[in-house]
Image: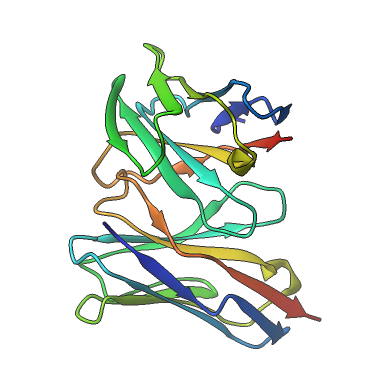
Length: 114
Length: 112
């Protein structure tokens, strides 16, 4: 399967800890976006990266950060975890950061903060 | 920024009937309107999309309509089947590759 992959699948952390989530885009895709989906709600945009540069940031605190590597994979980091950070974190890849190319989602990482 | 409202939040239909989900958006700069289907515990999957230069698009049992003047768009599923049961999300963005703003979702239950 050449789709978007994410790791880990599930993660349990304690309040105050730090977490790193990883995403590998579809081959040939250079843009990666991160979304947070709280149970029962639609996904909320966190970040978009294209060609290793941040191209957009949603309304999230500075505890959230991300980066994109030369192979276009990406990491999302969350510091000082709060209970409210419990959610499904989705990564989506696209050929470019804008233009007519659709975004395809990975399976997500389910983060539980206790 | 963009705001997308989606209705209804839940929809129960008999197998074979039609289902309609409606969304409104606020930013007139939005030009791309995708619909995603998300089954329990799975990733959102793009099922159909429409761009602002088109008023309607159809793919087998699924159709989307767009009214840019009124800033609303709708998903129509005909001849519903049990496998259509899922949560459906509408979204809006400037282009397909830009950040997506999602609606709150509609849980569709198709009763056999």
